[in-house]
Structure formats: structure tokens, C-alpha cells
Image (cartoon, rainbow, N blue to C red):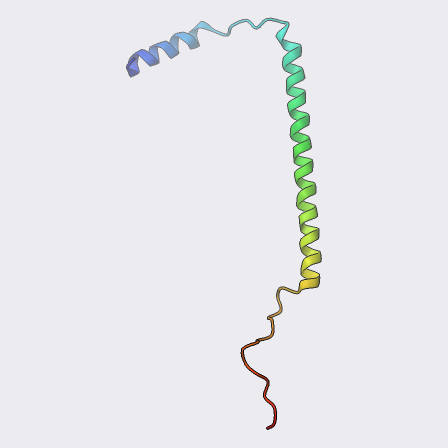
Length: 82
């Protein structure tokens, strides 16, 4: 199928108009959509809680470990007996 035939097929489909949807599909679609929205909301809340917990854990670790302080050098021996 070349490009012109594909474009003609697309134009025929678009000109045909919407296909009628059976009315018994509507409640199922609404139920699935609501479930997807609830699941997405739950996932976002769990991710926010995890981000907050990670920030608190990092803050507590940084308060005790002091990662910004340079560790003492162990390569130079102490100078005694001057």
C-alpha cells in the first residue's frame, strides 16, 4: 500500500463518522476509568510519602555523619619532640 492509498483509506475512515457505541459499555468504561484514577492517586500519594521519608532519613544521616567535614588525614605521622 503506497502513501496515496493510505491517505485515501484514512480519509474514508474519517469521513464515515463515529461508530455508535453500545450503551451497555458505558458503565464498564466509567468503572474502569474511576479505578484507574484511584490507582493513580494512590501511586502519587505513596511516591510523595516515599520522597518525604527519604528526605527525613537523609537529613538525619547528614546530621549525624557530617559528610561536609573533611576526614582527618592518616598519611602524615604526628610531629613529636621538637
